[in-house]
Amino acid sequence: MTKRVRTAVFPVAGLGTRFLPATKALPKEMLTVVDRPLIQYAVDEAREAGIEHFVFVTGRSKGVIEDHFDRQFELETTLELRGKTRALEELRKDLPSAGRTSFTRQQEPLGLGHAVWCARDIVGDNPFALLLPDMLFKGKPGVLKQMMDAYEESAGNVIAIEEVPHAEVSSYGVVGRGAGADNGFRVTQMVEKPRPEEAPSNLIISGRYILQPEIFALLADQPRGAGGEIQLTDAMQTLMNTQPFTGVKYVGQSFDCGSKIGFLTANVAYALDRPDIRDGFLAALERLSLDEVMAEPTKAAAE
Ligand code: UTP
Image 1: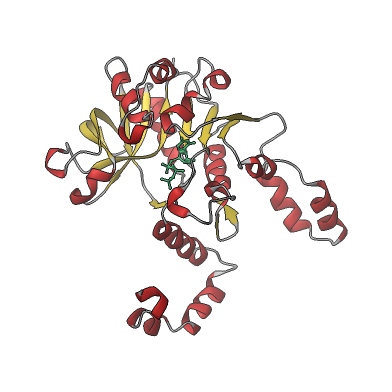
Image 2: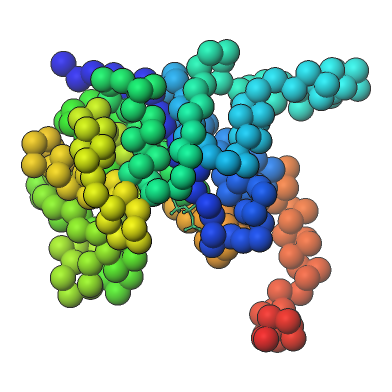
């Protein structure tokens, strides 16, 4: 019988070098899309998929993430006194229940594979979901929920898959596609950052995983790969020799919020989707006379 996935791991110990100087003291995962930090979107997606235990692999200067998932009595009391019950309810709704979060530290940012391995004792001998919070997915149901449905059918490991233009595959982990429909097909191979002419497809691994605990032993022995980091894809390639991997080409839109363009685009998309913000935002964009801005880059932008 398929073992239920109750735990999700959120690696949040990366340095976020693509987003400096914003990420010098502020964790990338606390950057906000409209008014919610990226990490909150990832936790919401996991809860929707039935996750009960939230494991954060944090690092230096990431303490604010722990604070974000804690009660804030001074703030709550003030909101209560001012009768701001709606805001108060929203804050409380966002919190996982008491005892349902765990925090562990990756003392050195040695790569995503190493960050995942740091969660091994907390996860134990159980399947787990892995969500990279800087990848933001907009879709209903959320991507992890779509993957859970495939997991129930297939067991084993499940990875979220996205299609990119063929010329761009060399920036990603690329999979070979075997039998099955978009909502659950057999993954036949994985290649990290292939040259376009050598790539098995234009389908890339995209920030959400359901993994079996056997991955931890492989990560423990995993030598450093690309960029001198311990790569999760390398360990998954080995795991593929003994366990099936299912790909889910999810329905929805993705934003790589670790990049500035992806982050800015996400803010526009989410703001336009919010009934309380949409009209005001559109009016503000109009005042900015977008046509003019687009036609004539400012001096600073041109430099
Ligand atoms: P990224 O490679 O996108 O994050 O990792 P990064 O290294 O922080 O960013 P750049 O490339 O320097 O801008 C994806 C996820 O894995 C976590 C990151 O925090 C992010 O959520 N990560 C990455 C770790 O937790 N530890 C690491 O050693 C590397």
